[in-house]
Image (cartoon, rainbow, N blue to C red; front, top):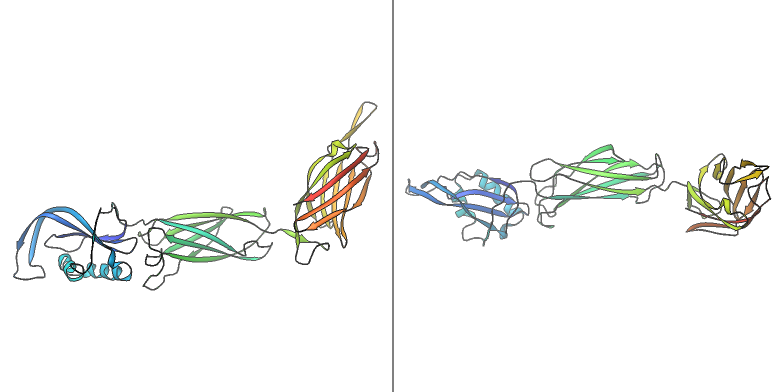
Amino acid sequence: MTIKARKCFIPMSPSRWVSKVFLTCDNMLAVQFRRGQHVKKVHPYGPGAYLGQGGVPHVTCLYPGTQGELAETLYQLAQVWSYGGEWVHAFLYKKFGYQLVAAPNQCGDCNTSCSLTINPADPTDGQAVTITCTVTNTDGSPTKGQAPAGTVTFYVDGVAIGTCTLPDVPEPYTQNWESCSIGWTATCEPQDTHTIEAMYTPSEPDFAPTSCATSFTVQCGVPCITCPQGFTIPKTIYATISDAGGCSCVAGTYPLVWNPLYGGWNYRAAPGPCSYDEFGIVYPLPLAIVLQCYEGGFILDLSCGSIGGAYYSTNFSCAPFQVEFANCGQPPPPQSCCNGTVNVSITP
């Protein structure tokens, strides 16, 4: 088993018995000892009774019983204790059980991950939004591990919107994560779906940087008198026209975009998908679709060519949003593009 250390140092140890002291990413103490050193007694008693020379780093002992605040305290003591060997005898030897482990290859860079939450999760255009990033020390115990420290920079659609600092929580630590938040105003520009990215920058080498991203959609709708109060219809909806007999050229799906000048959703194409041939000359015809709300349902203005008609919805629902128009008739060419009827379905 190889441990991962977020901190380590070489203690003062004239006997050269203690090679290195580690504080793991999971807040446990570990000590690497040496062997093969030549030891000479230079004082009748310690501290510093033995002087060692040579030797090489050898076994590493992990002390699981120290996990948590105790390990951090003992690590701080080791940094100021006169001699490393005496520190081991005073606080670890015959006081805690140990496991033989492989020494870490490096100190610091404990693995981290992050996650994002949006509140409210489905904001409307112009609504204040709180974006929260949680950074977790994934090498640390959920209850005794060290929480990451540093800053988080937020981006919306690739543009930085600000930075927050992870809280510096007083010890003892009881979790391996911390969160910080930033405010943002939801917008439907340049589109209703946005990508949020957070980049964690550690303030100390104990932890590795990380990043995370998510996307969400702003409710870019408009109210409609037909539907209950508070319900909105997206600013872009789609009209699917199907041939009910004699109007196959106009069949297809067309985007209707909210236009306050019409007080409804509209589509217009000139030329449209249809045309008529008169004396060998092909005349393209415009296609125009307008959907409007009224108290009892929806009205559809549909024209293909110079003449159109207004039709009342034959069926509709607000949640899920769907409006049906059946057997919408068209006059014969050349005033119109077809001679027959169509069915129209409106959906988000």
